[in-house]
Length: 161
Image (cartoon, rainbow, N blue to C red; front, side, top):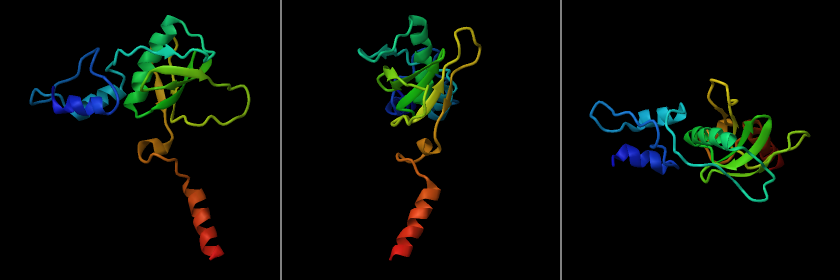
């Protein structure tokens, strides 16, 4: 197994099943290209999505299949706990384990904590792939940063002292 393959698997998944990775010029797997293919939805992990007991979520086998492809895309973008919009439903999923943990009520104003990406799942007959929307902090730091809030707090600390 090549080093690129090991690096991709270390990022949180077995993304090398399915359509097959592309070989680089030297005949070995190119990590950057593998990551690009995964982010484009071209590589499938083959991992099945399951629904947790007591989650209150009911999905058909066809919906679970589409969620599986969307979860691969979410994982390739670094998501670990995502909200998925599928056929008018909004569900939360632990992406690394592919476990749907519950429904999200979007009928009233509220805050859903612990979600690091919103993933839209294309309809059964749509030609488009799923899309991933992440907050800017998901690309760099682990904790969300609100720069204007941090600036205001810094000014308050200086004024107080």
